[in-house]
Length: 83
Image (cartoon, rainbow, N blue to C red; front, top):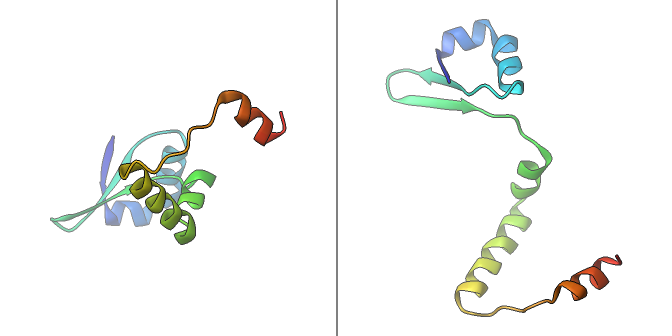
């Protein structure tokens, strides 16, 4: 893991983005009490950041906590997916 200053990041952004693409963890410190992690945004993160998707997931979690579950057999999943 690399910890760098915001100034270092500004001066060498490409270098640090390339390192993140190579799975290196990069933390940018800004002042004494602020730090930021650089992470690549993939399709999963984009999908989960959609407000409608987050709301539906939260609703599903609440339903599960209340025991409001539907059990689906493996063969039913295949049928639903058309496999």
